[in-house]
Length: 255
Length: 281
Image (tube, rainbow over all chains, first blue to last red; front, top):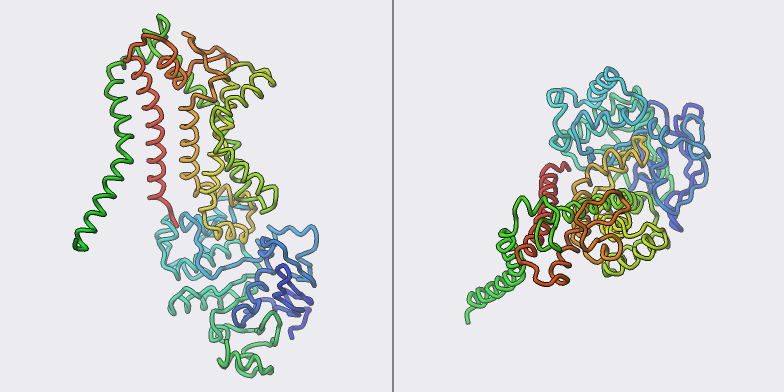
């Protein structure tokens, strides 16, 4: 278990339900700062829900109930009076399918910054370059920043979405199966850029396969039917799981 | 009969049915254009009517219809668009929104003469606006708002939810997402809806019958509280209420109304196709 002091994000006894349908039960988890944390488990285990609790994207669903606390830098992000928009600027998110907004590459990357305070052209320009570089997309698009984003390949679109999140200079980056629609080469590029990013950013990823989880993991948590079965540092869960269920899942006996 | 023959027969029947459906439209247009063109002249379009409308032009009726349509747009576009945005982007599914939706469907089915009577009661008499451009525009707007709301809502809903989610996940407010992504994407659909709604308003006779239309008024309205002539009502009057009316004037008026309405209709289609080609997702 991560020392709670060094955790960027902490789940304190979190249970979550859609109506009467409980999808997370008593989750206790600390997510280490500036590392890649892998949340994995079979479909319906609640990993996406857990991820969406961190940027409060689940607020959109009707009739949900949350007990326990979710802390970011020791502050309860569900406390009354929390500025949700500000929270989402600190916690970026990349979805399973690349979702470029209708518009140019430039428009996509700078969408977030122009929503808020940053208006100076020089700042925006440097942010554009920086974000695309950090997402390992700059070299491929530097000559066509003003062409429509949907002309990029799927892999490029997904890295564009990562760049779009990075332009907000987030402290945390959430990724929900970001490579599920991508070919192996694009997947490798995305993974590479994530390993670069962990130096400046806390990354939480739901991998699209156990193997991807094993490749990326600095810390991992295995979820099953809404329960956190096991968690551990490095590749421990993938190489030497302690719980029988984790072992069965990572060795492919079920899932 | 061989199967091929049956198929050919089937196609033939369907083709005939299709032609029968569109034939009346072409006939109406052809007759109106053919007989109407004889009545059209510069004077007809720009002069006041004379001799109990049997001579002169229909200028005040054209201006009246344009005024009423603009007045209708002024009221119906913001309200309709606002309603559509509320229903599509903000409203939760509860008894209130269900009631609003039910009302919208039913409003669209109300005969226009009922709107006319309601307008007479509410705007002309109760609010003391008199028979005036304002009262007529408001009555037409009431009839147009449901059309605009339902088409605009449909256009808004056609924009993928994911765009809204992305906007929120980047720290945007709901309104920022609407203004910067959803509205621009839905704009062609919304514009078409607005044009089609206004078009219907421009061609209606019944709602303006008691609320604004002047039988014979050879001058332009001088204030929004004045009466005005209007093309559909004028056409009704010269076709049924005045004996010995020259056919050229009747058909000329019909042609002007048709041209006005048809050109707006075509504009709507052009906007739709143009934007559909440019759509980016």
